[in-house]
Image (cartoon, rainbow, N blue to C red; front, side, top):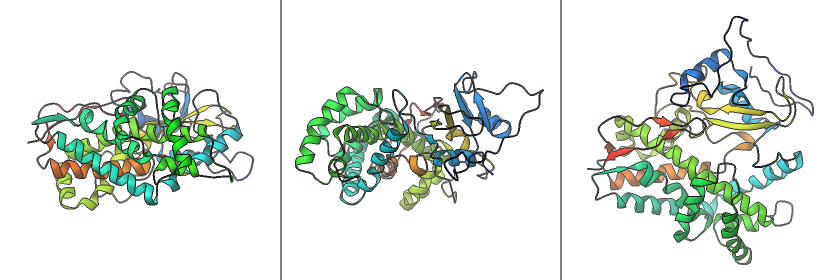
Length: 387
């Protein structure tokens, strides 16, 4: 039984207490302990085994580390994504969730086709720029640019503005769609034009949506567009970097994908399980849940959950053929990440372009740069040989 269970009524659901360490046990570990950022997995093993629900005082959050508990917490309506700035009221969270739900249907049909086409074109452009080179850094020259350019294409924004949007994604936007005044001003004339003359792009779909019989206000459209750009920027770039690193580290599996491109989706899901771009996903408690007080921050440790041996056999191994890699890296339930379809298309088309244009692609000799980061984690560089 998980620590979290769906509420049966307006009152809190029954809570199953975790095993309490003995009095002689040492103090609970913290995400801020020395060495955790370098390699968090020893800490994750300790948390899963002895502290499945614990308050991390230095970090300021309740930590959840087991797969079943993280999955249940992400689906629990009493735990909401924290908004930038002051904590919103219940009604504001509900409204935001309603607006977010409009994006998934928008990423279908003509908008999805336009997105896929834009990702594919951009991936080949970036790959061909490397074709005459001997070596390259795939993080700086491919991973950091492809997701943003794909999001720009999805929203129907001018391609020549990709560099400006890329700068916003790198310095201010996050997977929660944090606001930037420059982005608001940039999107405003595009929103006006889409309301007057909608097209097949995602921004048009948001501008013409009527969740309660009325169009979404400009502020909601801007926030949702920012969410897509934020998710497609830093988070997807990190996921793509880890995905390519995992495949380059397993050349036998990469060769299989060269011959059988239909295996790409499974390899992508496996990489998200083993090396998610976000290791820590915060939630805010709307009401008391067991020992967790109202208003407290709950840190869902995706990096720990994805390697839970109670859920996955040989969890540290990268296996393209793993039957069920789970679905935590882009959220779950009502919090499913809006950038997930874009990220999947980015991985599939990006890898295909690299393998087509650069058939001799392989890891550069020498030490392999490790993954870095505590909250978000991925290789910062990925040096490769192209010939």
